[in-house]
Image 1 (cartoon, helix red, strand yellow):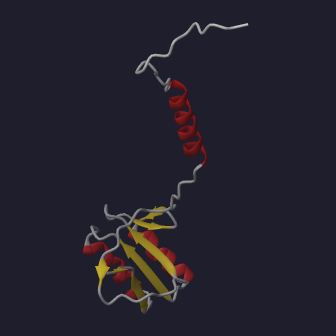
Image 2: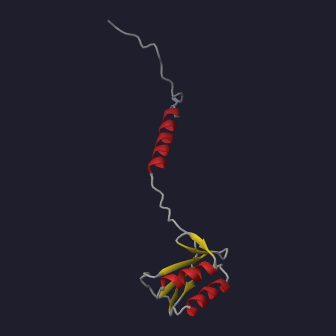
Image 3: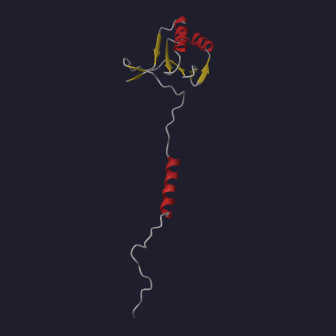
Length: 131
């Protein structure tokens, strides 16, 4: 018995359906977006100034953060200068570390420095990045 071919294949008329391919790509994209971990550092975003003479120090002291808007933070909570002075009087810290944004005004940093010197804190560090 001989069978006849009813369909002919003509050159150039083959088309690939890309709709299933696009569906698979979107599903993979959604899967990777939902399962990936984005590292977000908690805290105040501070761009530290650069210095050529920086040295690495272990931070085991009280760290005060000064934002670019001249707001002073301690453990992600804003403090006034009076509150900082009262806190330093009560707890008798021997060293303070200041992380000031490069756009913060120098007056805020100097005011914190003066409060520390007035209370007898001799070890005061300022955070910088090394070039």
